[in-house]
Amino acid sequence: MPNLNRLCVVVMLMAASAVPAFAQTDFSGEWAPRFWEDQPERVPGPELGDYLGIPINDAARLRAAAWEASIQTLPEWQCRPHSADYIWRGPSNLKITKEVDPVSRETVAFHAEWLRSVDRPVYLDNRPHPSPNAPHTWAGFSTGKWEGDMLTIVTTHLKEGYLRRNGLPRSDKATLTEHWIRNGDFLTVMTMVNDPVYLTEPFVRTTDYELNVNQQIPPYPCGVVQEIDRAKGEVPHYLPGTNPYLTEFATKHNIPVDATRGGAETMYPEFRAKLKTLPPPPPKQAAAAKAN
Image (cartoon, rainbow, N blue to C red):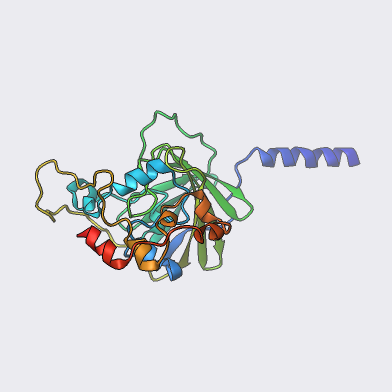
């Protein structure tokens, strides 16, 4: 009889492991962003030429140096949503809903939606990611698995986007890994972007939200307007070596220009020793003259 009992326990454990796990934490609700030290990054946007602490390569610097902010006034950019990796850094509120199987009552997906963004489903039913040749979207294709009470999500099939709103690019070959962690009324999300085109190491950020039971995200229909008169087909940009604003951040904060160009080494404490060996930034007068 004891052997039979042990056999029953083993069979039940095997059966349980074959069934998708039920949700460990309920992330559904209306969430308000908490900016704290991130406010300059997430509302007005980062300063031009500020790539500190980002593991970019030369290709990313070249793309960023060619970027001009007025590109966002183009009709095709005005209603463009943030992609799944960047939208966490946006200033808008977040709504998460859960999709429940009507028979098993299991939570099979979470849906995340921000103001002026697309619906982003996160599937929990062990479905595979599509072929690499499948269409890429702003939301990408996301699957999640539980690690205790933490939900780990892997996202592929993202359209090309940006790491920061100052021209730093992110390619459509990038993958996104997220960890959703809820502590009471606070939601912390860690994102890790791996991009073989523009990054030499993973780019990691954390973002916080707080539950707001009185929040309602309204519809946000987007209309295109003519903001700037420009020639047909004109695309705002700078040719290599002609962007006059890339040293303003270094001058304003008295940081060596070479440090502001980012790279993996600028993420680590050891870089402070190298800072002492780098030439100082140009004075304000020289920077202003170059910009003019």
